[in-house]
Length: 336
Image (tube, rainbow, N blue to C red; front, side, top):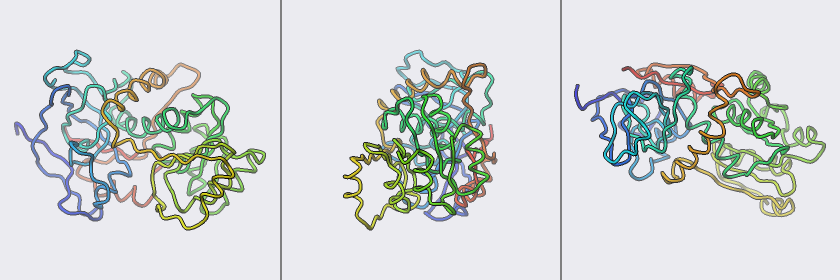
């Protein structure tokens, strides 16, 4: 119906069973925005938190779930700068609204889809890869030869961070919850991996680095890992916290141990950043990383898609992520 679209929705916070698909008004692109017909979107931990009522979208963002999308430009808002035209295949980093048939996106937050890439692969890139790129380059300032410990190494961000470390000349190590996930991480370029459920990753990380430790830790877990993180953080190391899957409540002498290491703890969230910041991030990623998604170079970057669900099956998709069963990204196919 004209002016309407299908979108993922929930009436009250709760579990995956609260999700359903309903008809809602189609967005109208504002000044500096384009309208994208979405062919595929993807899930992120932020979607699970939002569904539970624990992570509200930033002011002005769509209340619909979905932080990334891939599809086709179908309309241009007023004041467009000519960067995009109707018919362009694009992937988008957004503050919300991706789990729907249409989404309005600021021009600077769009990336051209490589010509040989599918929509489902493209949908697995924006949030995960831009988060990983931001954490490594904008936040941690990774240098060639540094060692990076990546928690949740088989997640969307984790699988992206491994490959981006190799592109930057850094050495990635990972933690994950199963030997199968660690094997996937190694095939993507991880130097080694530790099963956090059965191994002391703090001790193992030190052993793997000749007692030097990790120069950078990318941490989406938080409290449950803090002591082992400090154990294996190198002197002057950077511990970047970008999620709290294991709680944010720390009980213990964190500051003394951090002080002795001369370590830095840096908090980072991407969703709440300004459009200007996101546009700068998209520009840097487009210039430095995007060309490597096309096969032929010495390093070929590739998004890892765990599974694809039709939009109507979004409760099942959320349940899979909630159960930590995914390796790589869970993608939603949007009906056209």
